[in-house]
Image (tube, rainbow, N blue to C red; front, side, top):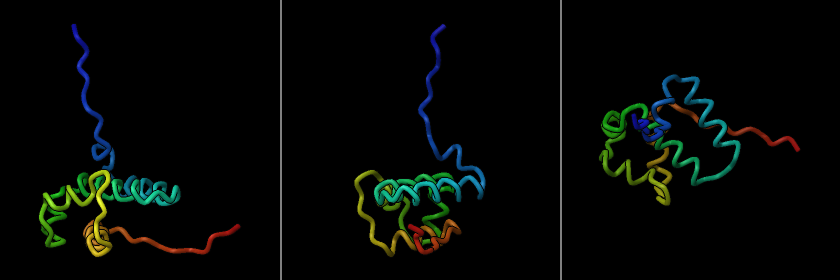
Length: 96
């Protein structure tokens, strides 16, 4: 019998507020902008892109494109999606 291989989808594992917060915190700590944008896209997908589109007033397809690898979404778009996700970013001083 042939083994069944399924595609890994990170959104399947972002199933709690704690998991989402930890994931985004880890990505932020690494400081990679591209990775952060992709992470926001994963979280939006986990929450339901249709619902995020409705809450932000943006098109569902536009959201998929905005958070696809290599995309450069406007800061306004990122903020709208973060608000719809119920996620806040916080700044704190870096301790050297």
